[in-house]
Amino acid sequence: MLVLALDTTTRAGSAALVRNGEVLREERSAPDRPHATRLPADLMVLLARTDVRLEDIDLFAVGAGPGSFTGLRIGIAAMQGLAFARRKPLVGVSTLDALATVALADTVVAWIDAWRGEVYAGHYVRGVSSGPPVVGHPHELLEPPISAATFIGDGALTHRDVIVGTLGGAAKFHDPLMPPLAAAIARLAVEQLASGGQSDPGAIAPIYVRRPGGLDGDGPK
Image 1 (spheres, rainbow, N blue to C red):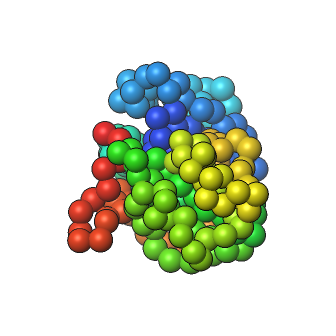
Image 2: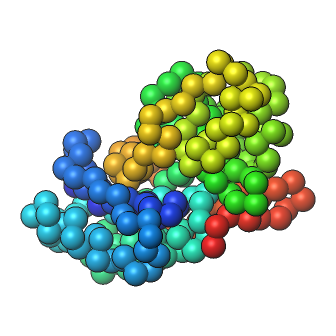
């Protein structure tokens, strides 16, 4: 199966082509340019560099959040357009799940910068989420039961000093802290499709994490 995947949940983002689990190519985008000015050109360049046509794609995959509100909407809309045009499935993948997959550690804490001093957070033990994602201030999220863990994500990069100050040597950090995620999104999309996950392009929606009380997190616009 040939998968074209896109991540626009962070300022840089990435795109990848993955065939039967093998990464053909994965590229980061330019963080100094808005996603709206890069798409769909970044995807077309990726296809050209790998000598792949849109007609060859079996599955489209996109990072569905949490993350930048504007980035999410642009990325999902771009992949919906391609999937609708080619009449192919589209799978949305949690950005936090993708980060946990990349980390390859027994206990992983994935943090995505939500701005205003907050992060979107997911906690994983042996690849399984210990609960729904949350949004909050780093000090609150570092309260027990989090102890020894590997941190990953741009939220962990932004708030590394807080993590080290609270957990000391019990905190490990993935290198790099904010890796490209498109290839991981592609692999997770195949798994979700195989297990009967949602694949209708029109049904894909951003994952918005809410604070207690029902308010959305204030991610970057």
